[in-house]
Image 1 (cartoon, helix red, strand yellow):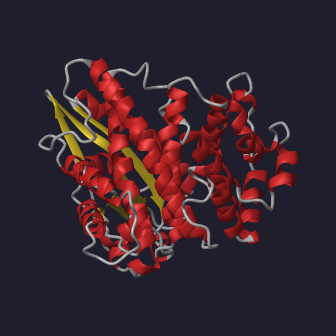
Image 2: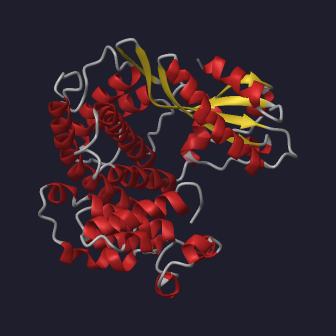
Length: 405
């Protein structure tokens, strides 16, 4: 399928690419493929970087690639193969300018040229794993938190197919929690299997590192999630979720329980990493609000100004009501990204009470005041937690997911 997608894409492109590079879990031979009856379902997606020689308009190429991703996915589905595709247009110089980050390290160490000139990847300079910064792991942790918020209003009405997507995201979240902790501890590995083994060694005390009380339980769950990620047809479904139950409501109830069970664990990890990241003498037992402020203070003025400058250039954001007031009040407090992260974390850690209908909205005032943008489209929502969630998700889609802000 990987090769077929490449050949089909090249035949449709108005500009012939220099190479196509496969990245992500399939490049590491760790992609998840589930057989459901006669259908083949890729859990997650297949990620390709389509490399063009300098010259063509990258934005126009990206728009065409996005359209082809949808069309090719539809064609594969008609043949009994469910697979989300992601194509990213880039130039050869991109690989030579990669800064130390998790994605860049995995791309250079595990990426595979599956079509065209292999030199675009082979000649790119490498960097040591020790150079991956903690802020990259901090971003990964908070990105997963935002993604978990996305499902809060969907679990009740989702069909079985969408519940399976939610389950996979929950499994992947556990694995990524492992990744962020290993980066902070200086134990990062570039495969899922390697990370699970490294976390198990750390949790059992076989390798040096800070003692963390939640590690043994997390290591067990990550091991089960990793086994499922690598072989969803043969491994036992993790997190005590009865995925194969013929009763969709059983599947749904198990997912709701697993979501609630995960929340306090993520909060412990968030506090531990925030304390390690801020390095201001506070421990993970400090109040969350204090840890959040410590993380914001760690940001440089230049980073804060750069993030806000990005928002000012976006007319859709700039025209929102009270944006200028929020900008003047929060400009030196933190970048929009870090402010949204703080609000998202506060909302996520309240998920158990939200699902039970017992959320204390009066305690959300601090998060409301730290929100960079309040979108008019969400103001009709009278429930404060849900309104703030809407603003966080809109922020994610408009200026966080694909832009540095």
